Length: 160
Image 1 (spheres, one colour):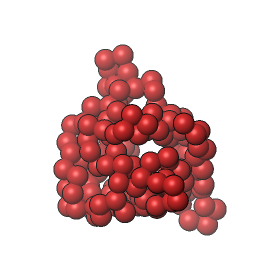
Image 2: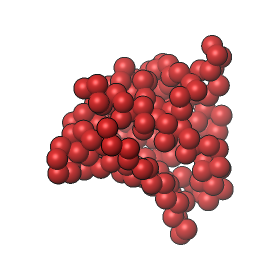
Image 3: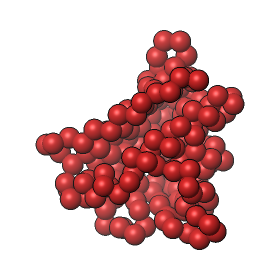
Image 4: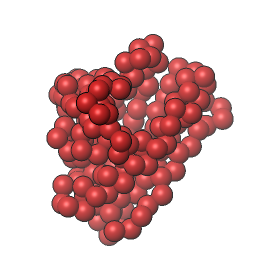
């Protein structure tokens, strides 16, 4: 299994975070891992937490929610809505940390087909201001993103 680097880019002019990562799996597989709640809960977030899906309607107009637990205690929860679900190509959703309900991110995920049955995932998060964006970046989100994508690699290698 190839170890791919995750690129996290904060734009200096607009309050966005872009995450770019390649996977050694087809867009259909990577997309499915983002839209199937059983698969999603297995890879999202850092290795130190488990994820419980509390709501999931993975279609355009649907909604989702999940909680992260550590040692049997809930440490964070998140929720949002699916604005657009275009199979194997794109997901547009809102993403809200329950502890900061006024800081909703609008996220667009695109699944780009690469040669050799691979995928480039691009995730663009737009938030309300630079303070919010910088708070997200300094929260340790990079650990959750990197460890989560490593877990996704492992899941995809098993044929998920």
